[in-house]
Length: 431
Ligand SMILES: [Zn+2]
Image 1 (cartoon, rainbow, N blue to C red):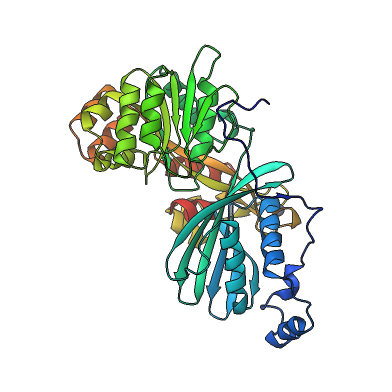
Image 2: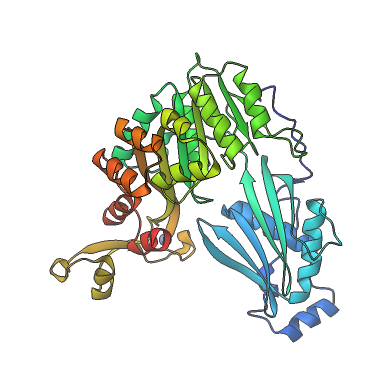
């Protein structure tokens, strides 16, 4: 696939394949299964891997297992390493606490951070190529009681954009989404907490609306997916221009569709509504706790109500639920306790649901893959009026319900009843 000419050239710091690094059996150095004396003995005879080797091994495992982030956590008596995988943390290994310093030092070198600064938070990034695919790593380090805690977020760049149909939305929600996206202009927002699949949805939406007659320009930090039909503006790491500068310049290029990576502040929110007001379809993501709450969040950021009222066409709030592993899925009878938790009367105690027993295919967790669940607000004329008047969330929610709005919980429970996920997963993610 040709790379659009406006893309910055890839400058990966190194190329890693499974063949050119020596694999390290991390489990053999786990303080949970090996005594301190034994580890000291290994150290004396030079059998312990170097911090460099450990970091490479951990990163390679994270990439191959599909993890989204790596946590290096100095806790009481150990350096715990865990992966964030499909929204839950999984322990990989616990090393001796004296490995904390050298490992953080290796990561700081990769992310060109200050080696000697151990008292202040630091942020950086680096990139590598794994199996031919470029991967971006965002590093965040904070000082904690027992040393320095480090989080590495893994951002995979990919040409593979999902279609809206592949994200797991119910047929009803999919239809509502498509109707919203038929608007030629306006502001369309996908909201949710971080790691809820907002970007994937917004890219799939862009894919859905694109045609050869349209001019599509994106502004992102970083570029997460390559869109072969769009001009993509990548915000520079030296901060020489920001979202707002980029957006103002983009508006002069007469686009039809603008994708803004994320609305994080008042200025971006204001310019995004400005862009929607001047006849563009603007797609973006935003952090929010629910779909209606997103409107109030924009008010609080300082976006004027009259601008929002005249531009917002729809808001999606989404979360990701783990799907039951198809290999070890089983039907089971709910216990009285679970029924009570669900508020289901005892008469319907023959209610049967599904779960994963746990098998080698799902690493014993009973889950494999994730699916999106969502709630969608379509802006009716009355709701538009309520936004204009800056009405309360309660009033807006009532009006949205009159117009077919269903809370995300309903969508999630339906997925548990049909055996896509478990009721425990619904409770874990939605509460
Ligand atoms: Zn399984």
